[in-house]
Image (cartoon, rainbow, N blue to C red; front, side, top):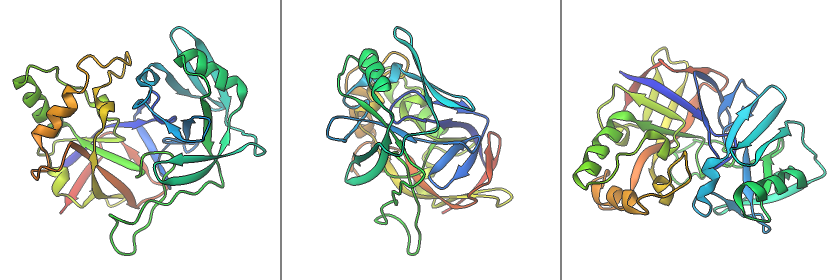
Length: 284
């Protein structure tokens, strides 16, 4: 039986996240104390298009912290700023995430200036997913009758990864004289252990052992240059080599590209608690 070995929440897309011992399963993914959702905020440019570490790897250096009242952003050289959970509904902002247009709410000029100072990039805006924001998951890879919601994650509310798969890929990297990667390069939400390597690619459902919740694994996660970014420093020490190695490794065995982890929806258990140590039963 697979075991949940780590849980991660990323309040702001492409900024640093943090590990938690437990989280609530919300309609758009993991929630911290049932207050804040994973990827509830996003950075956008002047056109409202989302900005990530793909364009600005230095975003990895901005730490996030959640308190009962506010989201806090921290930078080693530029201090901190707090963003209250209450937001101004008079500042709607359309956000484009890939092909989706999503209604959000701009968090104001002060945080925009702080982001400019921290990143060296002018014109960034912080936008939150509002209480009335809606973004359905594409049904392209869902099964008949399935539906789900997502905030500002790339496309799915949950990303599942497997420690044994990373161990095997790291052995391959060593044969190429490349540096092994830590799991944080892949920015998963749910990390599982005690599972055969790449079993996630042959699994359609992961159910908590007492059937309190279930994840439907629906699409392998295609990786981008973000996996080449050191999540502590924002540097890309080996440029695109880890990504090229993942393409060569061919985890799906069909020559289709660089894949690691599985995108999932929550098919049962909205409102339930997921905890590190939970046992998961895999169904193909």
